[in-house]
Length: 367
Length: 46
Image 1 (cartoon, each protein chain N blue to C red):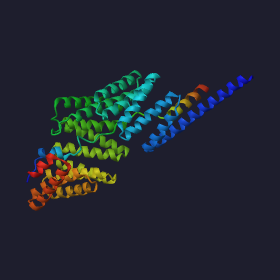
Image 2: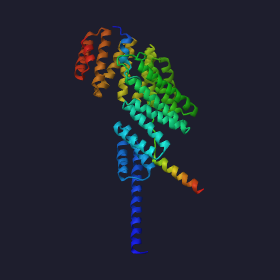
Image 3: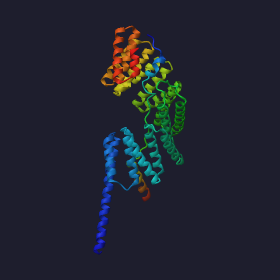
Image 4: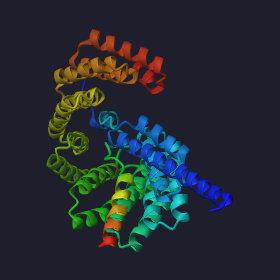
């Protein structure tokens, strides 16, 4: 071999070596990011994925997996602008390389992110793309997931335009239309996931369908769905889902006027919130129980639960919660004829309403 | 002293229209990608 030939060979060896090292290093960093995210350490996972991107890779499937996981990590960290950025990169990349399955997944993730950002029309387009690809590929799992996302987008859209003062079932027509669409998509999803025997997916859909029926004012249907959600949560030992189902059941029974049953469900919520050591949910359950006993005209018990709510709200430095507790305590003491106590809590409520800028609370307190 | 349910209902549930089940995010893991690649190379060798 002449000198020139050997130089070219050395150059090629070096380039191969650098390229090999780069790919290996990018992979090592990305695999560590993946491991950290699986453990739930998203901030650390993000750092490793970002470093992997800095090093770079020529394997576009690897790059797609990194973009997608970075998007999901930012989604879990509630940094939705960043999540949107990376899921968008993933969508562009998968389209460029003609990876249909990858494009469907990127579209699903974009839809979820756009939904959280309140960009419902764009989210609907992404859901449709996800669904179209899944149907073209005869991918039943993908179809079901796209329909679930569709339901969530319409549910969120309906809720975002709800009248703040209106009650479930009495919202304007555009809200009701969005909620009806959500229910249709959830039903579509259910027929597929039942066929697939996917109980976990059924559980999620029943939960959200129950909330949709509730907002539509179909409280009996809401109860049926939440009972299904509860049963599936128990099958999986998923206590957070169980807790949510009890709370949602309690809310539906309130609107059905079955206050005793509502109280039983809120008590199970409280029990689970304590087991899960979730103080904010514990406070919420106490508040709901206080209000339910007020409706049952059992003011002594109402006061007991409102005081429990007040103590937790104070511990959590939740001034709005504290204000609500004081307002409720004022009402319950008035009902019992404890005028001094009623006055004490009314004054406290007024003071907190002024501080938090709650104008309606302030006006109520002055009454 | 009696409190009507209609007056309380917007406040009572305190859950902003129900507690939702989470979004399902699609996953693309490197572990899955490499297992598929390995499976492919094993199949092609056979």
